[in-house]
Image (tube, each protein chain N blue to C red):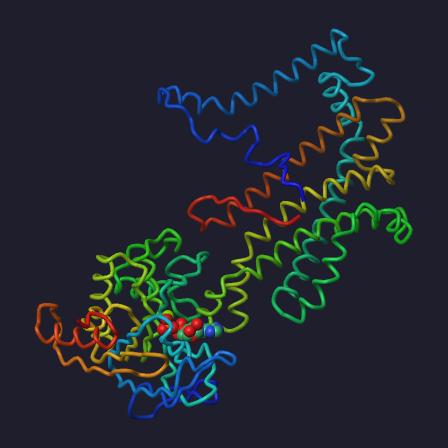
Length: 245
Length: 288
Ligand SMILES: Nc1ncnc2c1ncn2[C@@H]1O[C@H](COP(=O)(O)OP(=O)(O)O)[C@@H](O)[C@H]1O
Ligand SMILES: [Mg+2]
C-alpha cells in the first residue's frame, strides 16, 4: 500500500480497508451535503449504500475516489482503488482492450483479454466502445476496474441505466467477481433488492448522515422468498419512507 | 438576424429525398447503380452542348473558348512548360501556406485549449484578428514583405490558420469532463491525459478545421496571384486577360477546380480514417 499524495487521505496499516471520520462536505455556502459522516469498511466487505437521490451518495463516493478533496474530517483508504460509474466512460477512440489497460504500464493485450473474459466480454476485445450495448459497456468498465486489482472497488449506480434482465445478470457477475477477488466493495444503488442480494451490510444515507446500518447475515445465493429477506426489505423500505402502511 | 435560409447543405440537389415512394425494389437497385453514372452523363452532356454552341456560333469564342479549344490550349501550355512551371509555383505557395497555418494554428490552439492562462493570452487577440477580412491585409503585407513569395505565403497562412485554431480549440474545450475525470481515477498523468483523452477527442474537430482551411487557402492563392505576381496560375490567367485569351483563363479555372476537388477528397479521406471509431457517419458542423 502506498501513500497517495493527498494530505488528509491516508492509507490504513491494519484494521478497516476504508475509514471515514467526521467527513463534512458543502458546496459553497450551502448546507452540508455530507454531515460529520463516519463509516468503516472491513477488508473484503461488501457494502450497499442506499438513499434518495440528493442524499449525498455520489458525493461520498467521489471523495473516497479522490476526485474531491477532503476539507473537513478524514478519510483513509487503500491506494489501489477503482471506480465504475453509471456511464461506462470508455474512451470512444480506443478499442475495448486498450480501454481496459489504459494507463497500466507494461500491461499487454493478453492482460486485457483475460480481464474481459472474466466479465464475459472475451469475444470483443477489438470492438469500438460505441458499438457495445449498455450491458457490454458496463462489463468493459468492470474489466477496466478489475485489471488494476483494487483492494477497494466503488460502484456508483452501475446498473441503473440497464434493462431489468441485464441488470440481474450483472448482479450475478459482480457477486462472482467480489467472491473471487475479495476486494472491499461500496455499491451505490437505488434498488433495495439489489442491495439485499449482494451486500454484507446495507447503509442508508439521508441528508448527508447515516440513517441506518443494517447487517445482512444471510448466506449466498439469497432468495427473495426467504422470510428473513422479506423482513430486511420491509425494514429498509420503511426507513426509506416507502411501503409503510 | 433574419431567419431566411438562402442555402443549406441539406437542400442540395444531390441529396436523396427523405421519403421515397414505394416502387419496384429491382428498379430501385438499378437506379442506385445508375446514379453515379447519371451524374457524369449530365456533366458530359453539358460539355457537349457547350461545344456545339461554340461551333455553331451561338456563343462567341471571343467570350468563352470551346471545350476543345481549352483542351488543346491546355495541352500546348503543358508541352511548352508554361503550365507545369506555373502550377508548381502555385502549389508550392498553397502548400507552404497550409503547413505554416497548421503549425501555428495547432500550437496556438494547444496553448489556449490546455491552460486557462494560455487562453487568456492567446484567444482574445485571435478572436479580434479573425474578424478582419484577411484580403484587406494584402496591401499592408506587400508593403511589409515586398513582392516576393513571403507576402503571398503569409497571407495564405494567416487566412487558413483561423479555422484550424478555432475548431481545434473548440474540440479541446468540449471534451467530456466525465472522461477527464475517469482519467484521474485511473491515475493517468497530465501528459497521458492529453495524449490519450484530450487530443484524440479533439481530432475530428481539427480535421473539420483543416477542411475549411484548405478551401480558404485556394481562395487566397487565387487573389494573391492575381493582385501581384509574376508567376503562378493566377498570374497566367491575368496575363491571358490582357490578350483576350479566354482559353487560357479557362484552363486556369479548370486547374483550380481540379485541385480544389482533389484536396477536398484528400481531407475527406483523412476524416474517414480519423473517425473510424464512430459507428455511423454523423454530420458535424464547424467554425470557419
Ligand atoms: N458540484 C456540485 N455543486 C453543487 N452542488 C452539488 C454538486 N454536486 C452535488 N451537489 C449537491 O449535493 C447533493 C448531493 O448530491 P449527490 O451526492 O450527487 O446525491 P446522490 O448521489 O445521493 O443522488 C445534492 O443536493 C446536489 O445538488
Ligand atoms: Mg448519485
